[in-house]
Image (cartoon, rainbow over all chains, first blue to last red):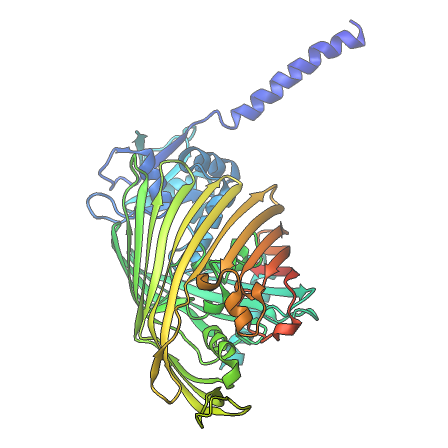
Length: 145
Length: 419
């Protein structure tokens, strides 16, 4: 096999290989998890957006909502893009405005999936997100309408 | 006390930014802060400071503390200081300090000293790192009213509707008192307007003010509209004066030089002072397009020692359009055009000429190009240039009419650190 012919085979293979790796970063779905005290099993995209923007602070039974974000950039970016339609920079800017006018506190970030599950499972009324590749049983998985 | 607070704030900045902290939290208290230092230079006209020679009298700093007391009740306060020419002079003030109880999503209550809800950006105008431009458009965010409209002390109600097919609505209503200062922007403008009487404001006060803001976040992602406004009731000014009003005292049909009614004091009371703004903003990813239109009306009656007389109304009109784009994590660019008429009864400047001033003091049209560099999460550096037509601006420097130029450039640079 000549050099030219082998490169014509190898390059496409490499391209497909790296494309698969890149897309595999988003291959897992983002799932929404909640503390078992949350009575709802379903949640709308609008509600998720309102919660993470601080507009919805109470569940329908009047109990308070607490939410957590993953610190890992790839997970955060995917969640913010999919549910809030914002970039991480936009999201941070939004909350900085709240902080510097006294209208809110920066959202709480957690490091890693295990800490996310721990935080949500231990905080009544709380909501978080993580990849569906992680096995969980201490929290409930919300169905997104 | 003020110097101690300033030293503490400076030490906090050095500590937190050097350690790369994005904020500081104990178990319950969240601490954030910022510090800006700028430079202003004009080719003509001293704008807000001695800018013809270039000036570093352009800085702001602040530190805030917030703590949740209960799940739905929070308290916080922000100390703030600024210097812009002869205003501020780094005096540390309480920018905001209030309790916030969120009873329901549609009703929350705030009490204390709150940032005043007005336009899109009034509440955050002190925080340079929260926008691309250095200066906010003077057509809507005039420096004249900056210190008075910065905060309101009293009670506030706010809330929002859930998102639906119509988008969502949020409201804010505040009632209380504003912070007018004897040496503040409004007092200085009053002294400047009656400079021929050598005015020195001794007291400026009002009964109360209220503000309102209604925001519609439309179903179209990133597009929102806002209607906001304020009314100030019972605004009054007492000033010493040492001048005279030309008057034919001896009834000989001639007003001789020096002939007139002496004026030793001024008692000014507003009949009405209100303004409203309609705003639109489209923010999608790295692009922000914003436009605002303002109308206001101001009228008072004045007693210079010979009884109250109604003063001419001063209806103001202004608008701007601004675009900002974040090219990459480091660079953002901004472009805006702003148009201001401080008195729509004199858009062509004839009244200004009649008062011995220049016609171009009746308007201010400004093109501004801004660049913002995010060095890292804590540091921002900005460079901005504005081309201006007119001098319908708030003139805190008392520029003489003969010294003013109609067309002038402003260059601004600013560095901000925040955590």
